[in-house]
Image (cartoon, rainbow, N blue to C red; front, top):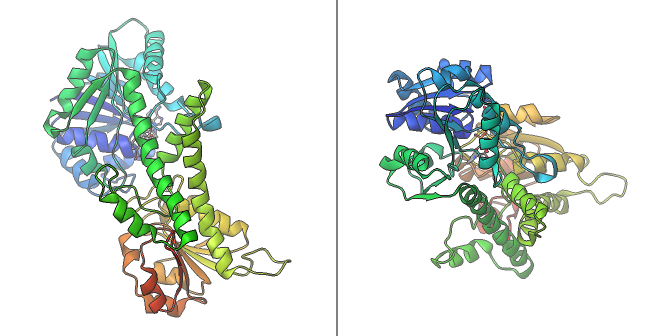
Length: 441
Ligand SMILES: NC(=O)c1ccc[n+]([C@@H]2O[C@H](COP(=O)([O-])OP(=O)(O)OC[C@H]3O[C@@H](n4cnc5c(N)ncnc54)[C@H](O)[C@@H]3O)[C@@H](O)[C@H]2O)c1
């Protein structure tokens, strides 16, 4: 059993804290957001993540998991051997990662620590941040106390975070202090995953390279989808045919609305920014980002082409009602950061459309950022009076809709499927005018 502090209780920090407690450690999770910590003390989860509440409850009850806003308590009482940094690293100016939260944590840890500590960075941070954190800690300590910095990038996915944390494909640890990295490795031994120990900068780069590669796969298949549309081929079958090849693999070859969320968009941008400031020209990454932006725009273009006004005086979707199904950036999460659905709603509104929308769990978050959108109770209420429906998130409950009922309540039976979850022939049989992505009409 190790005594651990986790700083930042968002999607990564809370899952990390709860899972490390579940592996038998004593974990104190800290956040500066008092409301979050108060809720957690009452057993209320601040985020939607399947299975999280149960793991948190189990470990709080077992006396292994604690919540606080007090750095001294988290780090010194009792003395933590390790502290994980799991705060956000959002997009800053020109795509550069904004490290202000990481800096704030490093400064507070340095000011407060009264014993030797291993500082582990779980946030996704630009290459070189580990060295920078070490400099900050050294310069902020009231008196020198030994510490080591280890990079331990996180690869979990929202929506399956607990299972991903407990069954990782690999654990990556980077440090100049091999002994510290070995100690962190012990935390993960029972997960039976390959553990790779490397230097700090390489570990930081592995995270960016992994996310950039996955984003590239998505943009690649979206490019193929575009070509399929022009040539009358079906990208779903193309992806299936490609995926049988072990060198390619089927994962991340789903054509559609493109990637979103709190990681891929900002991480690809941050990697491109890192390359640019070194005088490199990341042409592939630039194309990946452009194709992704086009994927969203092309969904709106399809709506325009199908139901848009032809009069020169009206905006293209003036007087039209469009329903959007799905506001979370992907299923099984309430996270709407960089959500394609939200982006598409704004584009539809800019074209003059009246928008109705629904998401199974992300309504509360969406309500905070959307204006003039009628938020509905379910897919059928959303479809009422609509000239078109856009499917933006592939929640399971949208996969088996009662199609005759849906058609009956719509003003025009038009569906633009941004996730290719319906079969074009079935939709046509039910009398819909249907457009997927890359499905050769
Ligand atoms: N969300 C994911 O799926 C995912 C997956 C892998 C890696 N990551 C990376 O992990 C990091 C965290 O992402 P997230 O989605 O969990 O972020 P998040 O926004 O959900 O949570 C960040 C938390 O940090 C807290 N915080 C900010 N400043 C603080 C401070 N000074 N002291 C204490 N707490 C502070 C915030 O209040 C918030 O609760 C990011 O770098 C992200 O790129 C995220």
